[in-house]
Length: 248
Image 1 (cartoon, one colour):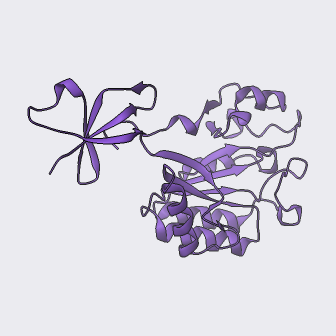
Image 2: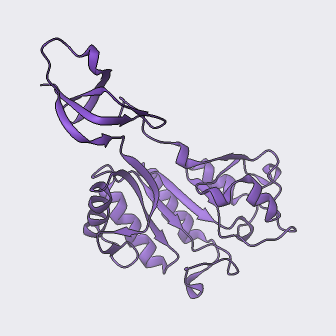
């Protein structure tokens, strides 16, 4: 059965459109049409709100009174996702920041178990392989070099089909590591890096084909100001990947 809604306006990801009707079947939007084009005899349900696609947040450290680092469990992930979904963020990457290896692994297992449920689309692992100089809120005692344990975790997640966004400071990695990560399907984000004009880990010639920047202050001009040669490295914002009507 088709349910028709008449909101104050429809936001399609780019513009606000008034005088529109939205058709929903089995909790999915199947059509958006001008009110004047509604099938004859159809009376839509008036909704005093702007109707918009659910947002996709690629960095969600917590929600609903829960921080993933403090509660790296399936229940913790569920509470975080539900809290964000209740206010319009339909899809998330639960985010675990720099911590003990055991905490990162527990968080990853919890997200893997909840993958595809309640809007959980993958995981964002931010750290622990970052710069001490630009650690921000990250615990310096838990910053550590990239190692086989981290690689094994990332490989396991990818082998189970879990999308992974992995934020690192490129200069902390040995040449070829980013290429290895991208080959296994990990999306690498350059961030929390030191300003060093001598250690350029982002050169395509050193094994990296693309670096994804998920926040605007990690964009190409800022990487350049930090001393990285980004020539030939593709900069693309994950925030541009938003849900469009009516497919979502």
